[in-house]
Image 1 (cartoon, helix red, strand yellow):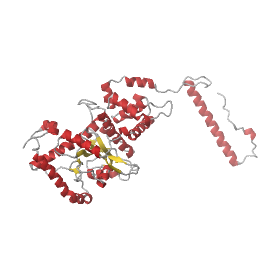
Image 2: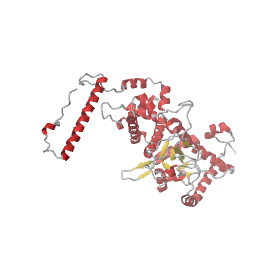
Image 3: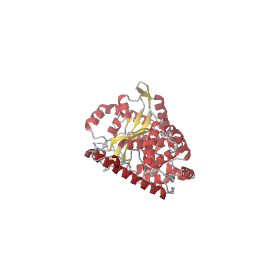
Image 4: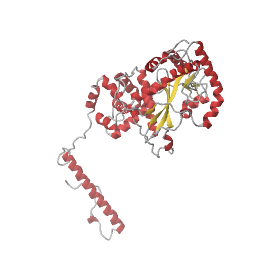
Length: 447
């Protein structure tokens, strides 16, 4: 291989010892060393080209190996419907509609860029529980491309309004907002139709779960210990509100694992807005005893042994509240990424993953893509989401004054609803075991 020619190539014959100072000679020595290193680099490059099938003179180069996208597409199209839903957690029709909806947010900037269907498939498979090693092997992409694709699709999901969670507010251009009363009425009608007319005014059920995460690094937060909850693991407290169809209306997964449900909800956007401007009567949420009882937050009567009328109230209140627990159960069953502790190198990304799962959960319900009893993986691992109710708020300085100030009006509301149920001969049915859980939604008996 001939010596490469450089513009301004060094020639020591052009220099006299008297004309070159010691400092300049050192610079020239360094330049000559770089010249030699570059020549060695070209020799190695020539050897690699020759081994790859190029000409002896290095003029021809073997084409760079690229994954056959057509072959990946053929294998993707050949997936059977049942296997497709197991892998991507939705049927092909819902998948195609999702790709079409997200396409404006996922433009192709280069001719060789990944197609939209491949980006969405990679992300759904990741949310379904696949590892980046298996996904990269199956779709012929490297790890750096995988993470870049997942971040892009998550951004597209959160930026697309038709995939977003249903808003309960009317936002004005000047930054003000008001409750969407028509929407509240529609949600209340769904609860009354499904659960019966025992407790009117419920437009949503609220609960909180602890989503397990790995220990967050100190670079992400200076409150690492606060993510460690009383049950012995690091977590994010996720607050969710759902409707009667178990669709999520609100999701917030930002608070530390040691934060009680009532405080986590109070710090969320919905909690702040409901405190500032409560929904018009009689609309209210229904939650468990971990939440602070208010006119717009219906909680059960306290106690184990209660009179028949109060016990009936607790039964029908729990019948409505159970929808959010079912919604979280469906969410965790569908998206296998929640079966293991989530990475916490970037807490904002972890929050976006949980919220994206909730939005895709709604997307599947809207497309009538409901899982069957034997759907997905029958050998599912234990979900890394704590579905047990948390203890009542232990922050006495914040919770007790508020509770004492409002306990009278809340008890009046409970008493009025309890009296209404009693007048219509509603009571807890005398059932046991699985039969009680199966017909609990429509249970009614006469005293």
